[in-house]
Length: 397
Image 1 (tube, rainbow, N blue to C red):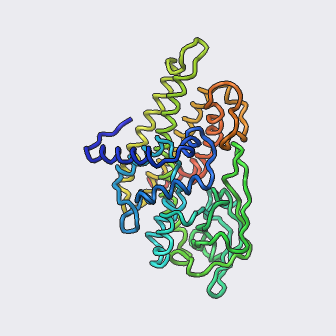
Image 2: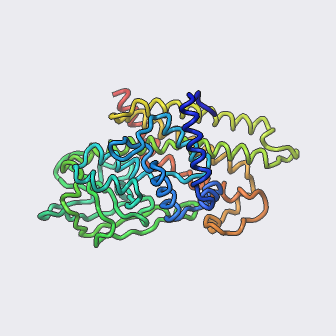
Image 3: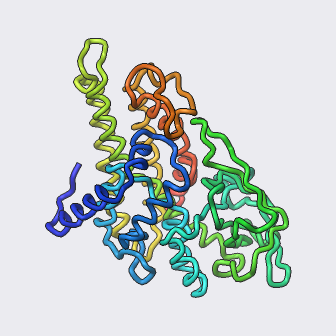
């Protein structure tokens, strides 16, 4: 799948490809293409390589230390990185709290945090969902009570991704228990080393533990770590979610997995001895998902072009729905191509250096891992049902 590129676009794409050939570590690339688990150091090494190139914040404006790339350049960069087997850029700093800080934070917060995000000096995580406040986020109960020049925070957050590695957490807390649900919420930036914070892993379907529950017990947070105004956190939360949902669309991921799917379908033979790719039923299903990816790309370009200074909530929700569904469809097709060889899946295979799992194609275990991992995409970042409610409310009133 290709766009119509200008000479400048082609030159930029070749620059990105050359960088990836020279600077993407082979061991990281191998893990990504085999659907194996990345370690903290893998992410940090890749982010630092990008920072050394001046590409540490591909979606940020130059005034905040970013590349200043236009939407098409950002899309080319994402597609080429994913296709080459690069890890995803950690979204928590770059595409979630980063844009919020640019728009709403104090100058002191911008000056301190933004450069550290680009250089990967701070690993961020998200403190939004709670056991009783997932899709209904406004029902959150984590409390922050003002005590002099600190807030004292008590509560529990869940479905926290990669919080075991994090230096900081951006956290939604209730600062006014008497106000209407959305009106009594604030956003705090909390150092994860603060006494009273406990991170406990949650094991997922693929046997991994990349998500956690986070307990906060009498955690003291300096008042200067409040983002914007007290009790205005719901505004900042919605702004962040628009960026998160656009990112979840995962166009680069979809392109890479489509390429892998086609390669696998050519490698595996059916009962008639011919490659599965020659089966018209398989080719039809691959063609359908490829058309879905093309439509996703066009919508993403439209949103990216119009998104400067705005927060396109409806389009972000559409992208989140379609992107997450396509990722699941690709994982399902990969699982079917691997067939029975993917059934005896063991989580131990996810660690680099693990022995190949049983007979059959080498990619079978990775396909199983990817399938289990992708089941979550229609839930995190706001479930599909919630996204449809948002679209209906905005479009239909």
